[in-house]
Structures are given as C-alpha cells and as structure tokens.
Image 1 (spheres, chains in turn blue, red):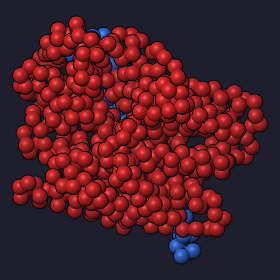
Image 2: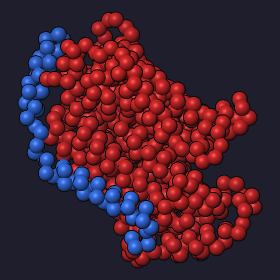
Image 3: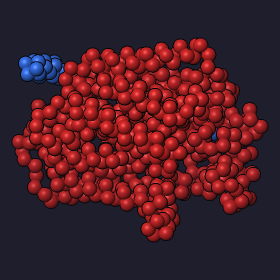
Image 4: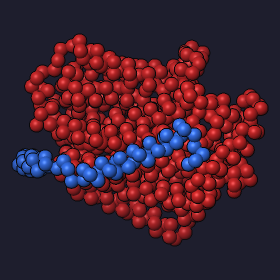
Amino acid sequence: MGSFDFGVSLAFWLTIFSTLLCVYYGAVNWNKGSAEKEKNVEHWAQEEDKIDEEL
Amino acid sequence: MGMVENIIIIAYLAFVGYLGFLGYKKTKNKTDYLIAGRDTHPFIMALSYGATFISTAAIVGFGGVAAWLGNSLLWLTFFNIFVGIFIAFVFLGNPTRKMGYRLDAHTFPEFLGKRYDSKFIQLFGAIIILLFMPLYAAGVLIGGTQFISLYFHVDYDMALFVFSIIITAYVIAGGLKGVMFTDALQGTIMFVAMVILLFATFNALGGVNEAFGKLDVVWNATVLEPLSNISLKELKPGGPDFMMKLSQLWGFEGWNKMPQFLSEGWLFVITSITFGVGIGVLAQPQLVVRFMTVSSKRELNRAVLIGGIFIIAMTGIIFIVGALSNAWYYEFNEGKNALQSAGAIGKVIPHFINTAMPKWFAFIFLFALISAAMSTLSSQFHTMGTAVGRDLIELVSKKDMNSTMITRLGIVIMIIFSVSLAYAFDEQPAIIARSTSIFFALCAAIFLPAFLGGLFWKGATQTGAKISMIVGFLVSSFWLLFVHFKEAKELGLAKAIFGSHSLLSGKIIFVDALVIALPLSAIAFIIVSKMTQKMDEKHLEKCFND
C-alpha cells in the first residue's frame, strides 16, 4: 500500500475503517433492539387468525 | 465439460429449486409473498441485500473499469460500505421498518404513497419502476446470458430462455421468501469466490506491497513512456491504447493515484461512479423493501456486520484485483497491461480469470457470476411484479383482490417484457449498457428526498413530495438525455435534435445527473413543503407513533 498516493490511501483506509465500524457496531448491538419483536409477533398471530377465518 | 462439473451444475440448480420450494412452502399470505412475512433472518437479509445490490455488471463491468482507471475506484467501495450499509442499515433501516409496519406498506411505492397519503405518489413510483427497471433488468439479463452462452458454448437465445425460466419459477412460486433464500445461497458462493480470487492474485504477484508496487512500473512502461508523445487521433478509437491515452488526457497519472483534482477523470470517478452508485443505492426500491422484511432492530444490527464484510469482499476485492491484473499481465503476458491483453474493458475480468487462475477456479467464478446475475434479477422481477400487482392494478381497481395472484401475474408480465428486451437487444445497445447508471440516477433524484423527508421530517407535505419527485424526474432526464458525456451521447436524442452530443461543453458534462438533480429535487421538496399546508396531525401520528 506504500505506493498509493494520498487520495487512494484515504479511500483504502476509509474502506477498511467502515468495514471495521460495521463489524464493531454489529457485534456490540448483536442482541440489542428486540423488545418490539414480541408485540409484532402477537399482531401477526391475530392477523393470521383473521385470514384463516376469512378463508 | 467433465462429469464433476455437470454434477455441480445439477446440484446447484437442485439447491436453488429446493430454496424456491422452501419459499413457496413458507408463503401463506400476501405479507409473506410481498415482504417475506416481516420475519427474515439477519444473515439472509444481509446477504440478500448485498447480492441484489451486486450484479454481474458490478463485478465484470466495474472490475474492468478498475483495470482501466485503477485503485481510485476504492472511493466507491468506501461509499458502498459506509453509505450503502452503515448509514442505510443504522439510520434508515429501522425507521423504514417501523413506518412500513405502521402503515401496512408492502412495496416501496406503497410506502411513499401511504406516508404522504397520496395515490398519485404510489402510482408515479410504480410507473417509474415499470418504465426503467425493465431496461436495468434486461442489462443484467444480457450480461448473465452472454456469460453462460460463452462458457457452455450454447446458443444465446437458448441460454436466455433456460436462464429466465429458472428464475421465473422460483420468483413466482416462492415470492420474496424464495428470492431471499436463493439470494443468500448465491451471496455465499459470490463471497467464497471473491476471497479465493484475492488471495490467488496476491500470491501470484508475490505479496501485497510487491503487487501494488509493480503497478507504477507497469504504468510507466505501458502508458507513460509509449503514449505520452502520441496524440489520441493516431490511435484506433476504442482500442486499448486509445483508452489508456484517454485516461491520461482525463488527468489519470497511474493506477495507484487519484486523477488530478477536478479533472475530467476526477469528476467521472467521484461524481458518476462514487456518488452516482454510492448514494443512488439509498433509494433503490428493491433494496429499501428489504428493511421491511425483518422483525426488529436487532436483525438490522446483526445485518450491518454481515453486510459490511460482504460488500468489501465484493467491490473492494474486484476493484483491487481489476487494477492488479495490469501487474499480472505485465509479468506473465510479454509486458502488456490489462487492456492490451484482454482487448476491452468488459473483457478484462473474464480473460484474467481464464488465463491467470486455475481451471477449477474459473468454474467456481462462473457460478459466482451466474449467482450475481440471478440474485439481482430475481429481486428486480419481484419488485416490478409488485409494482404491477400491488401498486397499479390493486390501487386502481376498487375491488378487494387477491394480492398474491395479481403480483404473480405482474411478475409474469414484467419477466416477459424484460426477456423480450434482452432478446431484442442482445447486441447490447448503448441504452442497455448504461441502464444501471440511468436507473440509479433516476431513483436517487426522484425518491431520495421524499423518502428521507418522509422518515424524519414531520413538516414534509404531500405537495412537497410530489413536486420533488417531478423535479427529480425532469432534471435527471434532461441531464441524461442532453448533457452527460456518456448517456447523452449514447442515447442520441441530443444529436438528433440539436446536432450535438451535449448541449453544454467543458468539464460540466462529466458531472453525473444525480449530482445536479438530487440537490434540486431536495431544495424543491423543502421549499414546497414549507410553503404548503402541513399534513393532518392524525395521519402523522399514525406514521410516527406506535
């Protein structure tokens, strides 16, 4: 990578940095944000029942 | 073709068939068929997003462009990951998912239509998809079919027929579930092939630093020294040396360097390639709809990790390998660079795979390319089908209709239309070759302000969204037809009416349509929204609160 000029080096390292950011964010928040899931499932169950009834 | 290869092909098709069938089995209602039941696994969602985004054109086409213009294309990879994955998933994904759920939206046009409480917006969105996505799909279809017919030595029409039948079967039967399951398989194949390709390339060139270092030597020996004192007119138009000379004239100084600031080459790499594709991805209907397929923010968080790694393995690797192919050819093909060896930009990657890599790898890579085409196509077909079924027929007709059946019908109509285009235009006329960039520019200019405003700004109004979409459409169409050096020339309308390829001259014609149309459409959106009546509080409550 020593032969890259400044602009290409910047793109290269920003690419690596963004990938690491995605990995870090995904890993740290792996189990976060699932609270609303139960509520949604409940709603779907009701929707499914309604559809079954209609059928 | 040997016995083993035949067995692998049959196993692959059987597996694709099985996943399509699995989608069919798990599809019980319209929500399953249109948005995969809003309960997709993060691994499948992330790979499906990535594999849909990356088509054969992105690998073969952009890989070839990297062989021509070099590592400055890494700016696009940075945008693909930072904007296309991180910003899209972390900031847009969850609000889209939640609002889509609250509004019971099943397609991207329906999402916008319901957010702004406007049938016009939903119809307009569907019509844009139906007018321009078939061209984009035909482009991908032609690319994939040409590859199959070349490799298997079969007739183009026959290959196109079989290829489209296979995709049609699983898209129609399995709905978005079938599409996403097969996408995940195809994404995995693409990932494995790319990682092997990177290691094999560095290995052949003696290591990472050695490989990049050689590019400067090759540039000096094959471009700088032989071409500096030759004028463009002395070279065969479109030939390898012509293209390299052109890149020099555009301000490129080597495969490891950025073109000169604000030169034609710089404007092309930054505005057309990096912004055009890198930002355009945010408003792609077939990708936005993926956010509505998961059940909670947790799935999106997990998908960020998988998506980030997937995309760097796609565009990151193919750009680096594309650029490095120059060093490989120089070393192993009598001191020639990539374009001199392969003959044309679009031929570099296939030629490189066939000459530089072992035969077994060429076979795996073929699968990766077929997978890339199939995963992009299946999503395009599904999106177009839902635009016909859900957004057009169901919206216009007053009766309560069976969405799944109408969407299936819509998919059949749009597949027949796209395949007919691919039959009619197998010679790849300019409009098809430019269809990806045309579609990206149009989508961003038309949909992005209304989409972002709809997610985050309660002050956004229906009229604001309508005007912004119309301004985006008119300005980007004007720029594509009459100004931009590539599209305007190849579409030919400017020449037919005004006798000149572009109405403007100078460096401005190198600026991408998106860079001009998106700000204007955004300004129109803000100004008109400020000037017009706010949307009903109750409606906003429904959009923004659970």
